[in-house]
Amino acid sequence: MLTFYSEEHRLHHGRCELIDGELKPCFEMPARADQVLARVRQRRLGEVREPADFGLAPLLRSHTDDYLAFLKGAWARWSAAGNSADLLPFTWPARSLRGVRPESLHGQLGYYSFDAGAPITAGTWQAVYGAAQVALSGQQAIADGATSAFALCRPPGHHAGADLMGGYCYLNNAAIAAQAFLDQGCARVAILDVDYHHGNGTQSIFYRRDDVLFTSIHGDPRAEFPFFLGYTDETGEGAGEGHNFNLPLPAGSAWDVWSAALEAACRQIERYAPDVLVVSLGVDTFKDDPISQFRLDSPDYLRMGERIARLGAPTLFVMEGGYAVAEIGVNAVNVLEGFQGAFASQRRDS
Image (tube, rainbow, N blue to C red):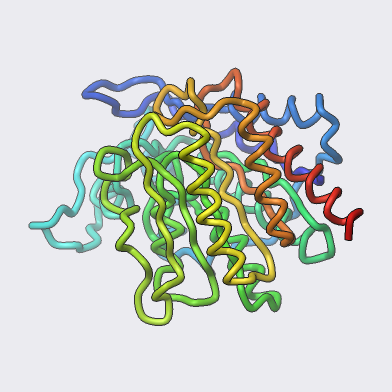
């Protein structure tokens, strides 16, 4: 399996995030990608390639021009005012306030974010732009005939909406790749999000469309981030009605419960019969993840990959969450190895 990876991810290293009333070191850190890449090479999963540069145009298919301009220019505006600390929001346009776009940097930061977990640093734009190019390179490899590819993206992306950042996410790598498949002739794309946290950004981007099926298995939003999306009654709107499936699970869910949800998601994907599958690959479902509450163990990720392979679709894996840094490489690559072995076996048998 081809892996695409960019060293530019290191340019984004937030100093802190707001958790439980305290500014704490960010759980989303460069070591996450380092561990996954090391495991890819240790297991000889396949060739590791640098991404091509597809420019801004594919990003603008999933994100608004004004949002991208804000992300690209925020740090220059911040540093020009003599600041060097991470840029974090502190005011948001909540329900009783107007959703206007202020002129001030802090006002725009609140306007374009939904939490204080996505700091902007001097290298954030270059890193998130690079991550999107990683996803697009994986997408192009599949469009060119590969049966699978792994986009080792960092920062992750599935919480980012068309004009909204949060949850460590700035650009929605999975959505950008899915849209690129459609723009190159695919009629139907399915997205399977297996991250512990609901992919609210991906859902919102495709919620009113029938050319993308979104399925997500995640912690129940009544108690888990992002709290305000991810419920079972969110099934799509307009043309998208019936193309959005959320499978929230209670804290403490282990493989028996989680795999039943995976089976339900896979049945939806099989009925949809997509031309290609994009997997938002979060492994924060692991039992020792510091900010999540599921109980999957490392061997379970092999079985996850095997079941996804049985869908029989060309598949792009896009790296999302996973914050047990010591185990993230094993768990992520287990999914890929499980998939690769089962997919190859199916081809031999057919």
